[in-house]
Length: 132
Image (cartoon, helix red, strand yellow):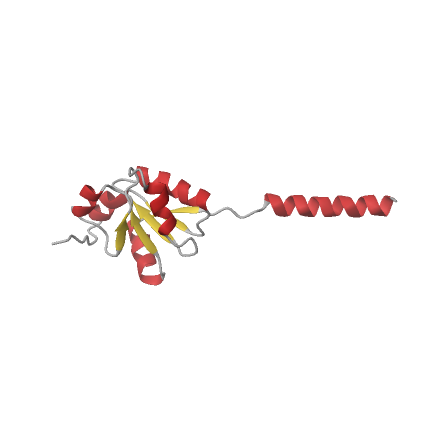
């Protein structure tokens, strides 16, 4: 009887530990230089969460605009591939940080957030695209 209770205790501890260690997606804040390297090395989805008006004034190449303040934002992010890394940016980092939390809750596997947003990207002298 004692062996059975010890065995059950071990099983319980293992099950509890495996549930507790359920990996949650980490949000990784990256510098503009780190982001530039990621863009060269990984197949990533780049999402600009600023307004369409802000986006028109300049954006990072290959990014798609999904306005964080849009009433359809939650629906719009479902079009992203949860299995591919996502890089988020906004003007200075506030909206992208909030968006990161939403993507994390939605089960995205790898989330990067550009530190300082597009403002820091520009300050570092990195290229922006426009529709011109």
